Amino acid sequence: MNHSLTLAQAIEGFLLSKNAEGKSHHTIRNYTLDLNRLAGFVDADTPFEQIGTDDLRRFLNYLQDEFVPDPQKPDRRLSSKTVRNTYITLSSLWTWAEAELETRHALRPIAIPEAAEKVVDPFTQEQVQALLDACKFTQAWQDKPGTRNQRPTELRDKATILFLLDTGIRASEK
Image (cartoon, rainbow, N blue to C red; front, side, top):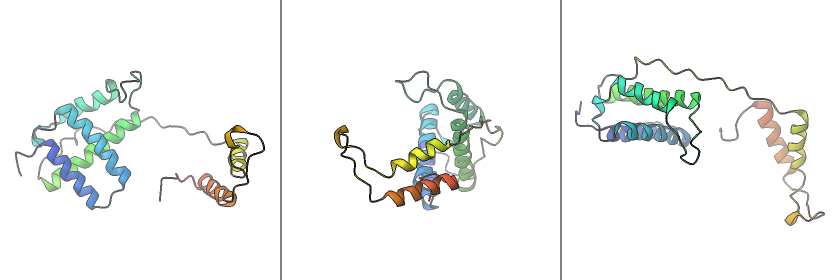
């Protein structure tokens, strides 16, 4: 193992590896965000092998208790689901490092954080009908009544909305 490898270098190698594996743009973006937070917390120039379980516990506690993602909104904290996702990113990094760098898995002794299950209320019939009705006409031009036009994509848009509602798939999924 290269004992002089920094956290920043390990992160770069990990992201290159995940990109080469064909991970989605969204996954790479989320990995980058999570790992940049870690690099800011422990210092990106820290030798990777010196980051221990206690450092990672402190980081996860920091995310749960102190980290404010937007200084303009000091009351906003990360959700338990986001902290859990960050743990999963860290686990992926250390699993990669265990195989590629022959280092220990510093996160393994830490239990995965609990995440509150988010209940999603389904659309009401009225809301579904409003979505479908919105497909029929364009918005009035500069809020002048009578300037709405029928949309040529009405049937396609209705089919898309019904597909999304019936399957539960998200628009960003392929």
